[in-house]
Structures are given as C-alpha cells and as structure tokens.
Length: 305
Image (cartoon, rainbow, N blue to C red; front, side, top):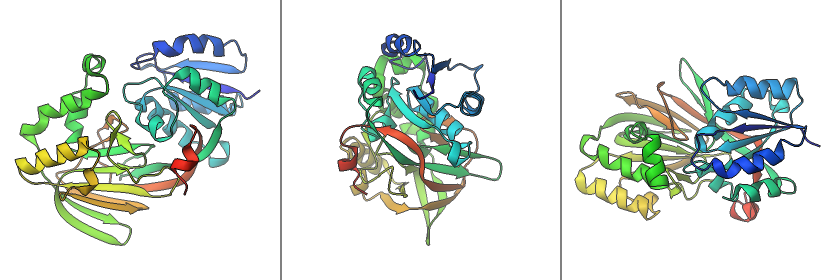
C-alpha cells in the first residue's frame, strides 16, 4: 500500500468535517499525520517523509494556504522524487480544488483517491533578486493585497467565501495606482494599473471566476492587468467580476504567456493563493506538469489540452 503523509490544518474553516476521516486513515500504519501549526516546518516534514519514510503520496487537508505550503515543499524536491498530491478541500475558499474539480465533500475525496486519476499539473515559479517561491492557483497583486491583509479568522468564519468581497469594501476609498512595465514573452506593455492577476487556476477569493480560460495543464500563465480609472470604472470592474465576465471589461488587458517579468512603481506586493508575501516578485514562469495531483470526475473533458 502507498505510504502517505497527511498535512492537516486544524484552523481551516471546515476542518472538523475531516477529523473523523483522519482517525480512520491513521488506522493504516502506512499513513503519517502532521498537524500544521506555527511550530511545524512543512518543507522539512515533506522532505523527511519522502527521503526517510519513502512517502509516495501527500494529502493536503486545508484551504488554498495549506495547498500553497505543501506545493512549495514538494517543488523543493527533485522532479523524480516528488510525491503525488491529493487536496482535501476543508478551507474557506478552496479555489484550486475547484479548478481540479475535486469534490467538496472530504469523504468523497478520500474514496475517490483510491481509484481516481492523477494528472501532471502545472505550477508557477516566482522570483526576485532575493527569493524564489511557487504557487498553484493565483497570484494577486496591487490593491487586492490590502483586502487579504484585512482578513481575520472572525471575518472568514462569519462571511465564509463572501469575506473577500466584504473586505474589498474597505479599500475602495484608498485605491493605489501602480506604474507597471509588463514583459510577457515577446511583448512589453507600460500602463497605470490598479492590480495584476497571474492565474494558473480559474477562480480566486471564494470561487469568483477571474480566469475562465485558464487551464492547469496547458503550460501557460493567464495574465490579467487591471488598468486604473475613475469611480465608474471601479464599479464596472467590480460588477463584471461578480458576473464572471472580467475579461470583457475595457479596463482589462489579458494575455496567455509562458513568462512574465513585472516592474512596478511603487513596488507591487502580491498574495499567493491568499497568503500575503512581503517580497516584491519580478518574474513569473510556468513549470509544466510539475506535480501529479488527484483530479475530479470530468477533469479531462473540462481541460482537453
């Protein structure tokens, strides 16, 4: 039987739904459980499980932040040593699990894991002069960072996936403008921008469809640049985002590329799958087929590439 490492985030919004399943899984002596906390280094735990325990499968039980931590840990291993990944969506938003069409019910995921399909999934590498990191779903830069920083556990518990929309209300009166130079493969654009989205998955901030053409298996980044404007433009952008038609907005520049180099004044901070990072990324590059992940029924029909 496959040796498994389960990374469980007890602070995730729906973690209680996973506890009974976790008890059942640990009856199998081939399963090791690590509960996420500030004292746990996920990189070290995954490295140890793969090298010492010969782990072949990692189960990430949590939200997009948990998935982000596990993806970074796996990507620090040589490609031939990377274990497969199963996402059990028990967080607040679970956006990347939705892109993979993973069932929302943890019980269904565990049952599907035994017979389901694993597919090589792209991840995105980001770099600057001082750091390197990875993400699976969406990097959101600019004014959206202030929204993410306003998220509290209480707000998430009260509003659920709608908490991101609730938080956006607070930054409307203090929107910043960024002068950016975006070099995307062979094209360079210079614009004044409110924000930039770099997507590998289709939804963000609680299953809001922001990149309807994105595919986690096409070897491309979906880059969405939101140009600045006035109050009416802001209202249009917000309304079209809620209507899942952001790419049709005149204030939006959309490209599908393999690589993005982004320079911004002032420096543009980003969230990676909902987690705020202090560093200012400069380069984004797709890593095709980086990790084999469990996908849900109908995935091949949804992403035929």
